[in-house]
Image (cartoon, rainbow, N blue to C red; front, side, top):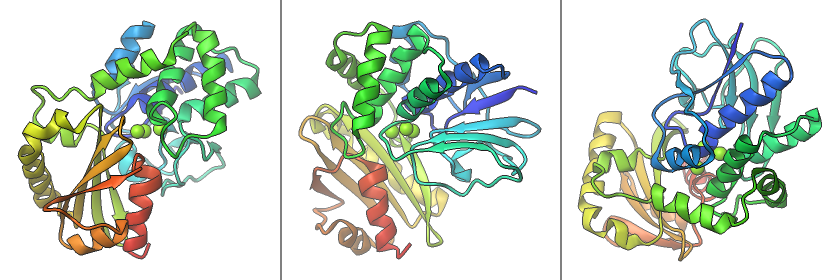
Length: 307
Ligand code: MG
Ligand code: MG
Ligand code: MG
């Protein structure tokens, strides 16, 4: 039976490329693996796959009757629909352990590093399997993306080491150029509906029984969204009303200035202010140094909710 390898819903570059890279590794080890993703690729991932000449994985959203390897997540609400405790056969990730459970022992490798690509590079090394040239380019791109070109607080020495090794294999000399090409694609907002922008890199979380959504747009400058701020706010309110959220946050992250304009739609705005020890100016607040949803935004919100 083939194992479907998949990243999280709203796939990002790490989720898509990790599915490809892990499926390749499993195949090299004699297993039958199919890379997949749970939705269309974002503009950044399209650029990455084009650049390294790799075909898009198939879309797979229903785990019924399948064997599944999860990459870049282990949360049920980010996993394929109808995932059962019998279907998960492996997890390779770099987030906090989620709520996926299994009936049997499985292969599980989760490390506190900046990217699933970094964990996978180590798994290739342990298995003694050479990384394919194109796949190395994908993994390299994923690490640059997830660590925001090493600027994110999630970035570790292991990520830098993996980049140094992968760029040699992939034949990439200028990783800054690769990162800027990805940033240009990812931060393009022209003609994209506000609701799509909110959901481009968006996750829902359960915080002590409260539904909290958090989207992030990584931008070269906040000017890119100046003209559509009202539309983004309206999209957040709409999504909150439909989803019954306690709070929806949108991180407008200025990658160059290294900070985030946090837009807040909440039943309790003062709770969000307390979470970040900052005051809202209207519906948003500038938080210097905030780059990472996983390491900064989500833990602070969880603390505020007493999780
Ligand atoms: Mg991800
Ligand atoms: Mg990741
Ligand atoms: Mg990400």
